[in-house]
Length: 201
Image (cartoon, rainbow, N blue to C red; front, top):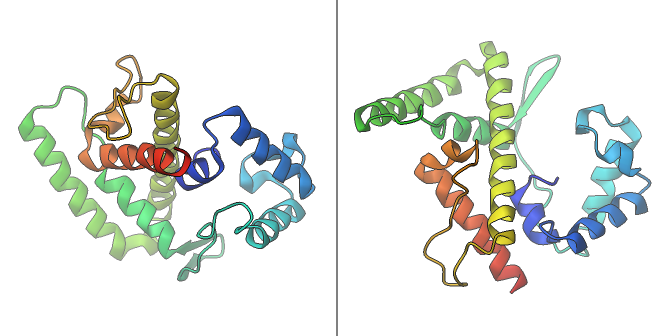
């Protein structure tokens, strides 16, 4: 939840007050803070059910009307069911895979063409590429973690000149800065920061 741009923006999780609101919500539905620090899949079945049901019932109160939405689903095998939103994450992870550091212009264009072909191919081979699919989902989750962390860091560093900002300073010493070499990734970062300003300023 800490790395979902939507939840970060709506609950104000870039500051202590927002974190406190999240902790109070979790404890109010009977989920201990210790369990909340675990990965969702490792939480107890009862806790997962309470989290989903209570968040659904309190979406409006939490100012998150689009937190839960309907989606098509496809059962790949006995252990894996993918929704259309899952596949959207997979495609995004492939298309926005960063190039190697200090790549030439030709290498960048070649990598992006290959990304497109890989994304197109996965649409037709998802049933036989479950390990690859799960790898891309993990890659997307990591990207969301990097994105939200950088957005929060930019605000904390006051590295955005004004509400009508034209640029964001990304930390030069960030080991994850390569993620933002793709234009779409920068657009996502800018959109997240802009949403925070629109909602809370």
